[in-house]
Image (cartoon, rainbow, N blue to C red; front, side, top):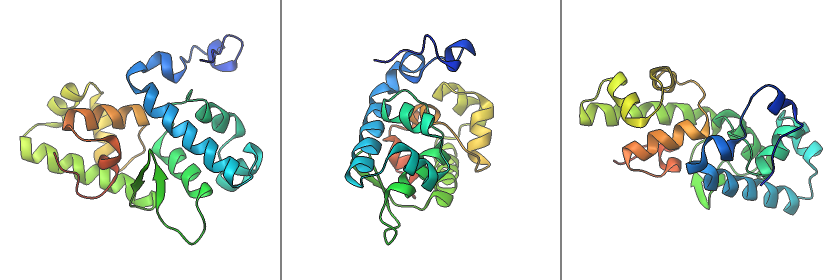
Length: 172
């Protein structure tokens, strides 16, 4: 596992993903492996992928090493940059996100609202049960970007895989 003793992140007090969220390290490692293998299979350098996606090479490098808690926006940009132009589906975690990036936040919003309605939980109660801030739930229900760790925590409370939360009609 890489550490960031001498990095800007360490100087700024940012804890790398695996140490900060050990329960989700395997998710990020799998995503990182997928990004790396797809990039290599397409004979792209990190710099070339960066140019295609407007994601910095440093973030790509961190993601490939499972060291970054990516936002869904960045994850979707990377996935879009790695797919063939004629395909609209995004492959991650050996499953498919059946939406284009713009729809992912709408799917999350709808799935959370439907779940909360079904179990009759307020946003505050739902946030507490998920182990995330009320602000994160409000951002999700307003269609704003979230990190993978937050999505994983919400999906875990809903008893679904995090990929299911990103797709239409998640079942609880």
